[in-house]
Amino acid sequence: MSPKPPPLPSTTALRVLAALVEHGSASEAAKSVHLTQSAVSKQLRSLEEIAGMALFARTGRGLVPTPAGRIYVEQARIALGALETAAGRIAALRGSSNAIRLHVLPILGDRWLVPRLSLLAKAQPDLDLQFTTQATGDTIEEADGVFRFGEGDWPGQQADYLFGRNVALVGAPALLGRMGGIAGPEDVRRYTVLDHRHTPLRWSEFAEAQGLAGFTPAHMVHFGFYALVIRAAIAECRKRTLAHFALPANERFDLEFVTNEPWSGYNWYKGDAHSLIQVNTDEPVTFDHAINLGCHEGYPGHHTLNVRLEELLTKGKGWIEFSVFPLFSPMGFIAEGSANAGIKLAFPGDEEAAFEANTLYPLAGLTWSKADDTADDEASRLIDELDNVALTIDQMYLDGEVTRERTIALIEKYRLTSREGAVESLQFVDKYRSYVINYGLGEQMVTAALDAGNAGPELRWQRMERIVSEPTTPADLTGKP
Image 1 (cartoon, rainbow, N blue to C red):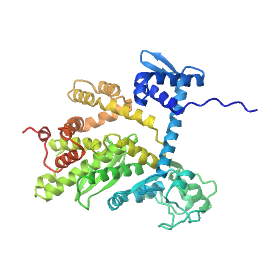
Image 2: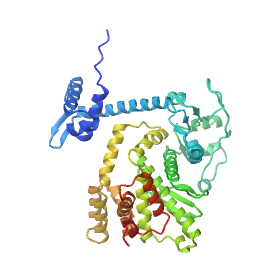
Image 3: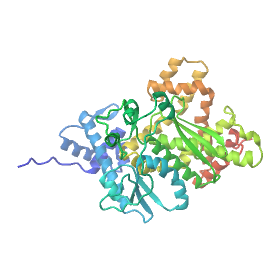
Image 4: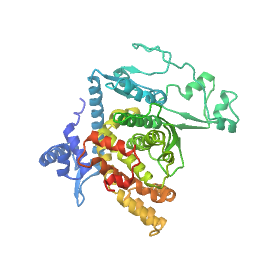
């Protein structure tokens, strides 16, 4: 006779557990899960009865999880995340008649599908496109269409040929020249090869096809979905901006990934409605970072501002002076302030979290968890409230009031970052000095101008359009002469 399995907690109890860990208070946890405080206490008692031990300890800092509590909440978040994912997939199955569910290979999505999303959205504005790169039997079965690599002989599926029959080795010309090129398959062993675990053709298959026994390259670097996520975020920022004001038909940008820079992203405006957006891959990769970068460097940020000024002022009015962008000037204040304020304009309220959960997480093959996302959002909000402290530290450093080492320690403490992060932050200050005021204060002043009079969404977009289309100065934001 098999032993009786232990009783399982309810989903309500698991939500209460996650809320208690997040807030450290029964009263605050009760508010977040919309229960009474006594109901929260009752759910906690039921969990502790199932566990057979205390899950929280009362301290001067509030409720703190015990070792058993930490184990329980870690698994509870996984369970809740899996249930939320299942609910989302079920909702997608019964979604609107305009919904199309696609499964796409990462590189194909990055280089072919994502760059065309804005054109598709323009041609079919009511289309609800949902796609994933997480290749499981379930996700493929639930998809309306699947982009796959192969001969098309998949049982039970209709396959239509799109393009591409040949697979070729590629390498940077400079690298091939330095290493002596590739005369035959055996030479590949001398190189560092790039590998993506989710691509259908692996290096092992290459070795088999070329008859290379025991194929072991000099080095192998595994890469993920970074470019795909960045491109998808920029495409969404562009879509939301174009819904409110027009840009020239020929506007475009190139995306380039760089290292060893003091910034996380940079827009190099090339003229003729064309930008080069660079992304520093040394920076930590987060989904909100991808959205922030897409808005700030692209839409409705720097790329949009430069396109509008060129179109309306340089070309439209013949004001050639606006073809020059003096960095340390009021123009820099408006550019950085509007680029930062544009993030919340494009993704108000919970829309950023919804886009991450419905688009970016599936693209990266990850499972979204509401509990983890809520905790991340709260942490980001609290850190953002320290922006003015960061400006004060920068001012003290630039004015010579504190040493470099003391400044690093202050950044660590008040920006809640590592020493390495503090050093990288200070490198930006060393290079751009007083320019740093444009980000925090600039965003505050532009946001205040957008929100004045408790403006609604459409009026806020109209005000942003004026700010990035006219020779705006900081004084214009206050309404004062």
